[in-house]
Length: 79
Image 1 (cartoon, rainbow, N blue to C red):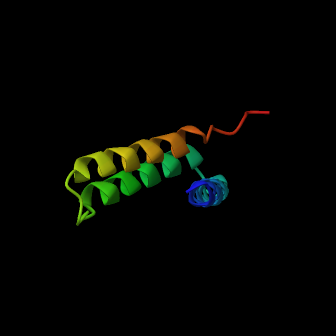
Image 2: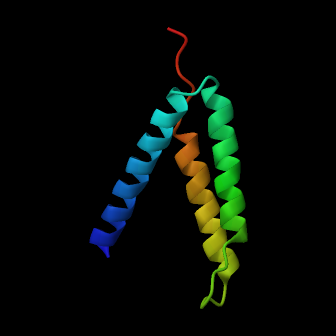
């Protein structure tokens, strides 16, 4: 289980870096990140989670993970 958690964390870091890289190439990186986050949240809200008695809990954890990933991305400094 620890190996799986480590791989998931590594995947999250990789995805966060990729999103940040794409955002930095946009004219308005903050708007891009906000729009992208909103799209990802909409996808999570619409995903059919089968085989779970409490899919709302799974969905809430996924939404929390999205918020945590995007909260790590700070606007570029003005320096």
